Amino acid sequence: MRYAALLAFALIVFVAACATQPQSPTIPSTAASAGLGRHPAKSTPIQHVVIIYQENRTPDDLFQAMAAEGADIQSWAIDSNGDKVNLKQVSLATSYDLGHGHASFIRDYDCGKMDGFDFGLAPQFHMRPFSYAPLSEVRPYVDMAKQYVFADRMFETQQAGSFPAHQEIVSGTASGLPETTFNVSSDPYSSKTLKKVPAGCDGPALGAVDTIDPSDGSAGPTPRPCFNRPVLTDFFPQRGITWRYYQNGLGPGLWHAFDAIKHVRYGPDYANVVTPPMTILSDIATNALPNMSWVMPADSDHSDHPGNRSADGPSWVAAIVNAIGESKYWNTTAIVITWDDWGGMYDHVPPPMMNNWYELGFRVPMIVVSPYAKRGYVSHVQYEFGSILAFAEETFGIRKGALNASDARANDLKDAFNFKQHPRPFVAISAPPFVPGKKSPSIENAEDPDGDSGVAPATACMTGRRY
Image (cartoon, rainbow, N blue to C red; front, side, top):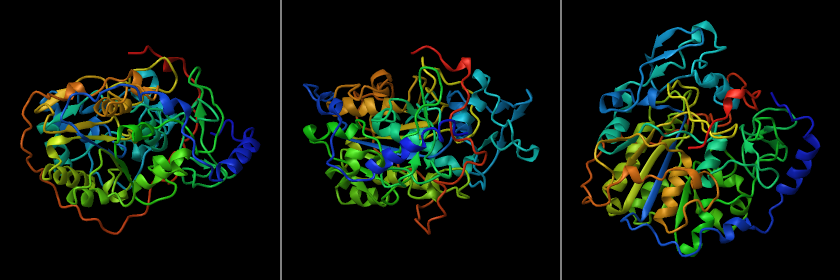
């Protein structure tokens, strides 16, 4: 499972010893100059971009109701025995999680046949991946998708789970810089015990992550997850752009992207990492919404993550959308709602392969909510996480592709908008009230049920052509 762990142990100890000491933050040179020339903001009314990042779902799982609206949604699957099975209605409030590391991606994808999702599961658990959420639970999501824009070709950039996904949404990449350019393919674990540990510069000294050599899919170094690569916020000061990253608690965590970015964690920008996530509601109410917001789940109960025994995610997302819609910010805001990875849940659309061994991953849902979003529109344009970053770059006058990562190649979100239309009045999204309660036990650092972290053996079907 950990192909390079033993060979790299001494290197991990050395890197960790250096990385745990706060140093003068240095922004990578590529971020110090790239994208900061004369790049006027796109001529739109948008002054605020809000990314709401939920957990571990697919379009087939959450949005069966969108099939009637023209979205590419399927109600059946082919299982690992080659049999056709109808998806089964299952509450969001499951008690189980499914494997969604890189090895699980290889298994589920099965060279594009998309028939490995149940492979290796005990017979009594055979149907767990083949489920869809009841409309009664996800109606707030469906209502937003029907009123605004639903993207049915949104793919997670990475072929792995939460930790690299949250790196992608701030950097456009999950590379292990500065130690390696290879891509992070696992959640952090102890290089001594191989057990999962909290992620980031505040994590354990012996923390490590697996990486993949994108050229051939082989295992790369196992660096400590305290990186120093460019992030989108590096370009903000010279533009006067304000930002906040709303997360549940400070310190290390799979969903705490900036804790793993060294020059942010040990620099003044870390003041923009705000807890708890519910602070965004008070920021809206007190006219303090920043230009750029990343909003993580309020807690495990409100994350949509399988295994959290809760169906409260839609109430959290609707609370944010309603707060913005009923505020002075509505006419200047674009809200992008997406999910960080597939979570082991079935989806029928094979992801397009880039000419490497890591990208793209499975489909995840995306909804764009704005007074300028097209009305009741299903976008079939291919997107990934870098598409959201590209949209933010163009909106705020930063050169598209300034990160020289997925933001450079990805389609932006222009297909979702019609900036010639008059801003439409906001109609409140009906949802159960958001009630932050006692936080359920965190599942962020729980063991994958099938122990599938790591780098899967390379298979010849994993490369493709760029789009």
